[in-house]
Amino acid sequence: MPINHATRLILKALSFDGIEVEAARHLADLKRLDPMKIFYKTADVNVYNGEHKVPIRLFFPDAETKSAYEKNELEFPKLLLLFHGGGWVTDCVDNYERICARLAISTGNVVAAVEYRLAPENKFPAGLYDCYAAAEAIYKRHEELGMNPDDITLIGDSAGGNLVAAVSLLARDRGEFLPKRQILIYPAVYNDYSENSPFLSVKENGSDYLLTAGKMQDYISLYAGSEKDKQNPYFAPYLAEDLQNQPDTLILTAEYDPLRDEGEAYGRRLLEAGNRVEMHRIKDALHGYFSLGIRHFYVQESLDYINEFLGEESWQNRNGHTGENWTTRQSCF
Image (tube, rainbow, N blue to C red; front, side, top):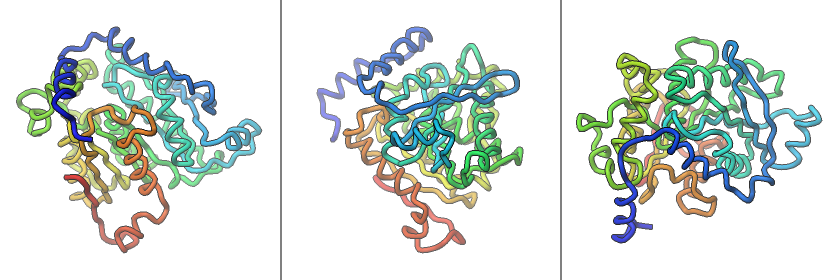
């Protein structure tokens, strides 16, 4: 539904620059007030990044899958490894329970949500390395878990999309594992949201649509340990010179989002490097729309794209080939 004049005025009034970390975290914590939470089917496990314990919460698509897991009888179905958003500074797995439960039920996948360390207390690359450790542990234990590694998909929104892209680059460079698929939902993949940004959406959508360019600049500053960090391709994946040998990629962007153009530009660069890429711009949507209720049109549309992308033969059916030639499918551009 298009944004009408009255709604635009309200959005403008609510769009302001500046991040006060504790206040932003308390506001994000309001997502925990979810009456359906007690019905979510979950289990908690841990992996380690060196001596640091990284908690992971598993969300099951149904009671039968959870029961099989509890009896140690489960051969894992497909799995979504999720890195949550929040500007690397706010949010946590508790705040993402509704999103994770919805993903599990809607896709039939087990969702494994990673509780990575947040900035500014833990600057780059602490959170990234926590996410990498979680991915590495799951890929290395896939036989023990009864999984095909090709059935593991990395997924994240906003800062979580940044972490997904960075983990995929790091995995390729270290050669320890390589994800088959990644899903980037309105990802933050660049390092500059000032007037010097090369992306038009920062100028068009950077002041009146809740997430402002100023807030993004603050998030970047809180996440980075130094100016040098901001030039690291694991900090800003769009800066990577080599984007070859990356996973099949689904990118979803929002029309009224300052991050829109960088996500789409990253997808085009992945495609130019020889990867398989599918991109969709969600019309009339704002940054953060994926946390809206499951009945919301934008969320339903996105889940349809995700389920198509996860389908075993989706690429072959849509593109008429088995992978020798790469292509992209774009919508609403």
